[in-house]
Amino acid sequence: MDSKNTNDWLFEITPKNKFLSLNFKEIWQYRDLLMLFVKRDIVTVYKQTVLGPLWYLIQPLFTAITFTIVFNNMAGIETGTIPPFLFNLAGITVWNYFTACLNGTSDTFKANAGIFGKVYFPRIITPLSVVFSNLLKFGIQFIIFISFYIFYYLKGYDLSFSAYVIFFPFLIAIMGILGLGLGMLISSMVTKYRDFSYLVGFGIQLLMYLSAVMYPMQLIKAKLPEYGWIVEFNPLAYIIETARFLLLGIGEISILGLVYTFAITMLVFFIGVLVFNKTEKSFIDTV
Image (cartoon, rainbow, N blue to C red):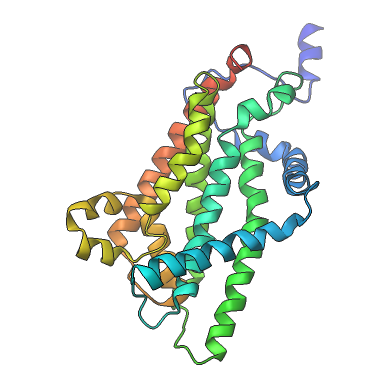
């Protein structure tokens, strides 16, 4: 009788005892909840703001203008035949997706403690929803980039997409996975060490200057060779540089750099999942 009753259950919830657990089948079963979280993330962020989703447009435009004035007009950074504003907007658009994923996932446990303590669902769904919901924000900002691209093209600038531009979505996927992995890692640490939440904002700003967002990688190697190795060891710099090559035809693609970036991304992601799974078992006692 007991055996019959046990077999009648549709799902059986058991503790995660595996060293590395990422149950894709279970995540797929909760796909409706994932979509609800995505909708929540999109609707609630700017629900009580005056400008609402217009902030998606204002932030990259003003940042690109500021970078153009400071780094191109004042510091004299050359962008070749590419308009400096378009050069900066391309880097900022890709960079913003990474920062949005990292910021949104780095506070997962603390922000969702009330839900986690009441009902079971795969906890990884919450950071995943952040990565998917930020694709909408990236899509809007990318449309803005394309609009300015067409504007400058009609004005006679020599612009052309790379023949490999079809691989651009894979580049964005790598950026999202890297942001997800780092975010889960930081979120797990924040449950015990609250200082990390204050350091994230500062760390992201510092990391932006080391990721070739507002300058070509070759420039830092040529002008500051003693510090160039810092940028070369930063996987984000290769993503930004490759994105500009695909969208604007400027710079170069480093196959070795992309292999290194992919390897670091996978390593960070699996470490993030490992620490995330370990933390979710006991985080409710520390949050």
